[in-house]
Length: 637
Image 1: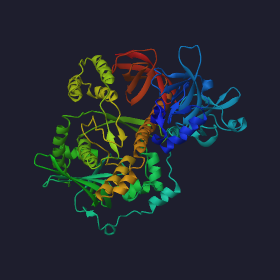
Image 2: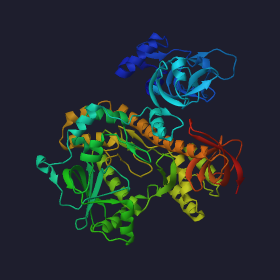
Image 3: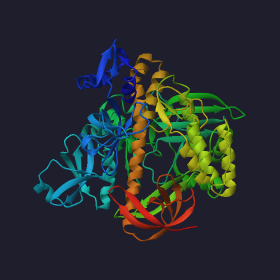
Image 4: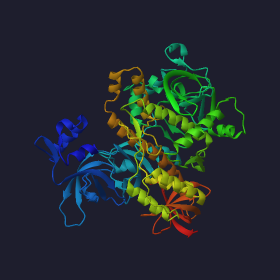
């Protein structure tokens, strides 16, 4: 929609407008916001389109799609016209004597969410709903008598068009409501329709190999899965034929069970990704598929889509065969077990693991000559029976993680070579401005470097120095922050961070819809079915844009949940002094908890400290509604 609204500034022919956007065009014409001139449609003077932001005091800020507006337009609360945070809106510019351009919302063209989450709170004699996203109070479409029967803090899902109550979620004071809050805040659902569940269960629990005579039978090969210790679904398995230097990467063949455009597929497309909480997951597919018939369980025949990567004596890839197969995983390993095997502390009945690791080590070293190697710590949280924080820890990349990652990269690159258009995972180079800002930030840490056109080489030099100073992980986070986010697109643009000319996602169709689409495209390609291939590409560009948005939302849901758990912990520790380090110091100082518990963000007003500096903060407030913790500096080090 953004591209369409932007095109109206310079004029657009009707034949260039998609059916979806033609409906919006008719609406804009009815609102007298668009006119036709010589066959082109233009946005009329005095109107502006953009995305709406709303501050905690209720003032709106319109991020205009018209580049002539260098600053956000101000929209006073009375002029919001019931528009919500994140909506794409049409606004009319107001004539005022104020120095900043003011506007009034005419209509929300696209709702950020069809629903909002509020909690009940008494204001004087009235009970209103308070938005968890904005903190603004909302008059609900319900009688005061019925609202006063509810316990204060009751969580309600409301319709964003008329503020009508749709569902009672729980109570904001109950820790067991956090999961529902995080899901509802981003309009996510943890339940599947009966139709989806019945479709999934209809496939049963067992794969009968005799029913698939056209598949290549690889059950004799010693495939294994390697996953986190608490994994429920296993969508990749590997095997290494050391004698012939062939790496097999077998991926759950979800596309055999989920046809394009059926009810499960539509639901998976709307979800886009599985969401992972510390205590459970919200899967993209019904569990009868994701944790059963599709999952590559040990000692169970399973359908797989498999790449056989053949290497020469110099470990160069010489052939990449794609096989519709049946496999039988011989063993389920977790990462810790593989690490112990690689260290020599534990024996394994699988003889090829160490030889494969030695191969992937060489492949990794070769790849990192043109790619980046970031040391990132993934925050893991464990909860007690009351769903309060019990402990946190950082999970670091180990040898076992690297072994699996490099195998998956081989398969992803091989898949990308086979499609001309479809679903690519692109990562474009960073903007120069962000790189210069990064160099400024690094200079404050004693890492003084000047810009080089060979960014990979520059970043490697910075990382070597950061290693010597003992701040590698922190510096890597700053480097990652300066880069653009990887996104899905129908056309290939390469992957800057990984150093690949072509790259896609092939290895996780149980938890990523992008991979499921790709599997279908690859099967059509294998069968030389051009008609079906093109059928699968219908609206693919919009699907890729949607997937990038859904990916960010899935991440936000997971982060929101952990932020809420941290806020509940902080609410029980008001006045406590904790050790932190500074992660942001521009508009407001943000510090990360680095004490017995780790990872919580704490906001500190009216204070400045250098990035990564260690400070002690006293917790002064915790807002469970917005999932924020506030503190004041007790002392810096």
